[in-house]
Length: 353
Image 1: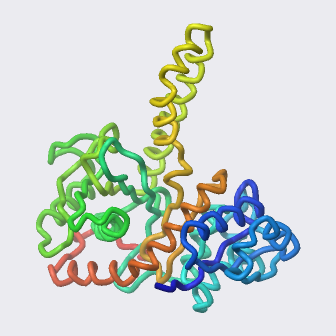
Image 2: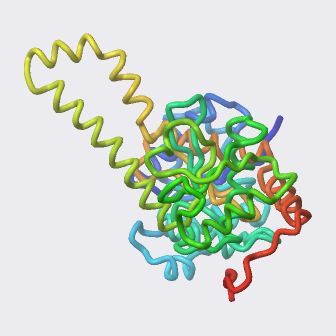
């Protein structure tokens, strides 16, 4: 199956062109059908391509020297969208010159540019940022929103559940993903009014391709008992940072313990297979590639510090979403929700009001 090419913001991320091109090349070695539009400084990209001959016939370069800084405000980035590598990569998706865009640049700027260029899907109030997190189970867990929307009402949370389930079916193959709302407890009386109302709406809705299983607390996100965790962007971002920090704490603690004495070093050699498995499981590069769900086009956000393996994973996420036609899948699921006569709770302001 041939895929639309993927626009790569070659200038984004901490390492810039070298790692972005190397990551795309690694993805192409795994899947030789991938084709790319590399957006950025042509001289730097051509130099990076010298080390990856497999990319030559699969790539076109769109020259652009202007880059959005990591600390640049989204409002300023929007004004420079038509002259920056990030903006032109997203614009390529809008114009049909690429099927998806991948960037490791400024998250807020990428979200603002993508929303303005691609617009939110019809019938959807707001897009959401979703990512895969490791679990103790067979499948990763999808969590959204992770920062695109600081405050969310009932309708937003229900729509996020629909989008998250569609994404989960794409990446896990599970026909009816297990969906839960992040809350401070599992009892039906816990949480804010919006969370409780969203739970009631999801329990009452019929015909949706998901199994709503109530609430989940933050310490159970990675147990493997849930496929999609839904929350507002403020809580989701805090939970994500806490999970990432805990993972780094564990790995640093083990490193310090195994290097504290000669006996510890011997113990490390004995337990090395287990510690290597742990390191692999906690490596964020193996789960890299957050997705802006709900836009009229596919945009994937790579972590700014991702290495080539992480960038390759982000590219593969974009390709998988294109293969599964995630935009139409979400639209179809939202249509089922409308047929179920979902109505927002009276008195709650909707996006844009």
